[in-house]
Length: 301
Image (cartoon, rainbow, N blue to C red):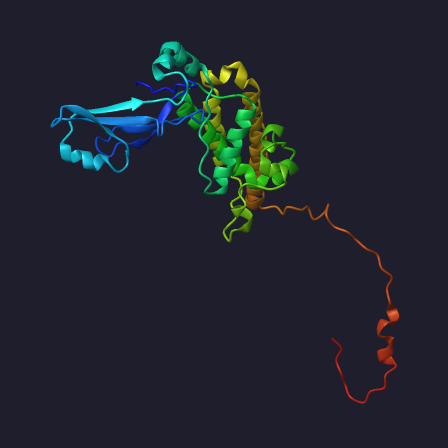
């Protein structure tokens, strides 16, 4: 698939506006630098009545007017405001070299529009990966990279409200994940778990095992063996190991409770869990009754 490259940095250009008349791409924006082709595209159409090329100044309002002349040829020209002309720039740029350089650059996913707290966790994780100088080559970051990040987010989001409980069971989450901004201010991302009026879901060993297997399947792919990913992948495997340790704890607790519920014997041995106290007898406890002179019979309960 052909790519439209930025004339400044060589990165891919994305279409940001289309022609209202022919529906062809009109304005492009670079995915890396701030370069945008807006107001640098001139448009001409061939007028069959005059046999001349006619220029269009206002791209947004004059295209419909041009339709009355039934143009069958449109000419788009990309201009530059720099001192050198576009032709000079083209002669100084080797397209193949630019494409090769761009293919070697590392890319990360575009941040999500902030809608909920899970989007916030996603964006913070992208910032963390950017700080670690990791990424994927162009194209791969939108497929394999997207799958990896979302599966890691699913695991982190699932255990997010249970950090204290996991820590209390001797399972320490790797420090790299605790550097996310919300954890640095002693907050959680899934705040609805605590503030919402709903049944609080406890960690399920089956669901946790499924999330672990999905992330392990991602980091077992060839891209994860690159040196730039060495530390990150090591921390992810460590996280999976810690979560499996917690799963073992949950299974042991469940098996213990199942045994207790199905057992005919009491949980506590009555012979080993009994206390005996010796107290002095009080023979004169009811002596006052004998001293009472009553004329009517009565019964003491």
